Length: 286
Image 1: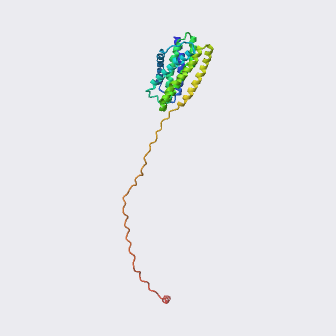
Image 2: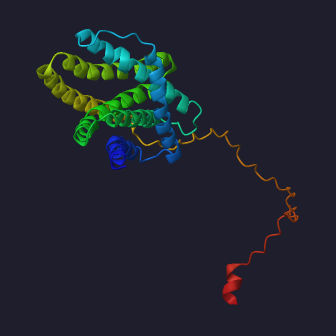
Image 3: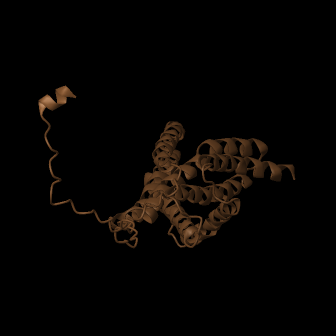
């Protein structure tokens, strides 16, 4: 029982921590928790889909460089990324909350981490003793799980560009949503598988190269998707053009005719008679 709990804890802790990280990045307008859990479940469903696709692949002679590239791309990268892309599309096809570009990153990460968690359990369950389980768990926690996470970031970025971007580039972005993570995944697995087939010294070198490659890819993809994490501003309604307003009507009051002025009596046409003149002598005698 202790071994089972240990395997589950070591296998799922890296995916859980990365899930918390992507949820923190989406804190401005977070997605519903139920949708995130559904995305993780769809990621687990990509495991049986991958097994179905790889069941019919022909086997090649092991221990060669060609076998390393074949297992990396044909046996792992291509079927796994196709399965995750299919689950991502089925997940968001009719999801109403899938309404902004960064949601492509969020849900692709859920699918990728759901896949990585189950794959981790499958690998660690094959460990023969506690030391092997711990060693494999620590190695995959710093390489494999972040690798799946980086692949999911790239897939989600181009998926969002196809879904929300220009219709003229939709097909190209869907192709890139598959081609870029397949290339990233294939290069990572090739470094490990080819190095493993060429001896311990080469494997150690390729293992260290994988560490550098994983850190660089994670930093590059994480920086690139930051352009999508901008808060959605509420749409500002464009003011409607108002028709020109007519001037208010001028009130018309009933006009009353002006009062007739009083009649002016006519001026006399004859002057009054002049006063009689008096002599100066008579005035003095008086």
